[in-house]
Image (cartoon, rainbow, N blue to C red; front, side, top):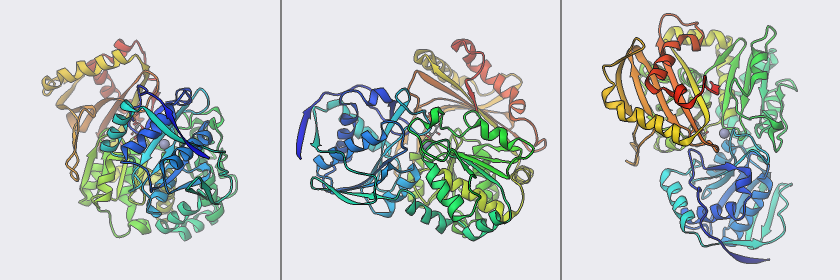
Length: 541
Ligand code: G1P
Ligand code: ZN
């Protein structure tokens, strides 16, 4: 075995986005692409020599090969030890937990989250810091800067490491510890939730359907829900991780998890339905005859958190990303909790969680989590719901109706326009941005604009400021329109339009109907459909 130094040159486009570097798989497989980025990670974190790191991924196509490259580069760099999930698998929340539990210097997660996988799909790499959370802007910027000046990288010439069996191996001078990806995580869940109550729930005939979408949560869900909690075998479907996710789109929303939605809306639906994404950090929650929006789920979890043992002592505070509906704010106001509004992306919750300002947080994009790790956590959200349902002993639908009756209902939807020409998308944003100062007081489609600005966030913990985080327009009566460009797409631009409206009287409307005037106002303000030539959004969630 010898360390080789390979000459390279900077590759354009290695700027980490909302959640790490995400590209088409073929791009990642291109000459030096992965190696350049990994070497830049070492530079961006102030060197890797002597450090202990965690490594794992969501099992998508190229996961296994990329893991071997990372290991050989870590060995060449003098990393002391890498803790790897068996077969290079780790869900994102499990990786976050392992980074924290073992007191490591951080970790590398191989995942493009909910993006499709395979040779024609996407791949991604992200670095998480020692707190277990996604690297903050300061670190991702340092990594990006390093990609721009790179001239060489180092890699060990060696055979592939056998990651198939737990145990400790050597790669050059570096230790490689292969661990069961599920065990530590399952133990953590047992410490948070009332497993006895959950066992009793399933013993009483409660029916669950968990769709793992052929992604990484399958083994976790089977081990916890079926083996430990006694949900009948077969409650977890699509539970075997596949490199191409069975040709599916592992994004747990009503579009991509349609089979589950149809089942939950049928007459003989199970009591509870849920799904998770490629790397296990997202969740979708359903009850018989009801889809719970992620924003509502977050609000309901906050309102009922005291029923969960780990949160029985009360919440320190709560947070949501800016475009997430303000249902959470209503709960926080009622309970006297601080409620923070952060930019899109889990990394912005890190400081709030670390400093003990918040216990629960979430995003409208199916991400919910707590201070137990520093990532959103799909299975955690499912267990939290099950724990609450076990204690309240009522169906999901009744629970949400009760919630809206108490707090009012924030009708909410996100409309995505995907693969838009980037020049057109930027022009739409620029045009609206320029007009923001003149909008307050104007009327649009019968709704009065009360405020309009571009969201900037001042982190209360480290004082950093993050600008240009989305255009927001507040309308009469708590209605709101938010526009931002996606930071995770890999082809063209994706425009996201977030629509919201509060009703404290009529609580059982269809969300799209309830939001029709807000949707019309958004179109009048932006001319988005005309300018993009699209008759309707590509995805409505
Ligand atoms: C999307 C979601 C965002 C989430 C991110 C990573 O980012 O909107 O909430 O944190 O994926 O899962 P976007 O594509 O909007 O930048
Ligand atoms: Zn994900």
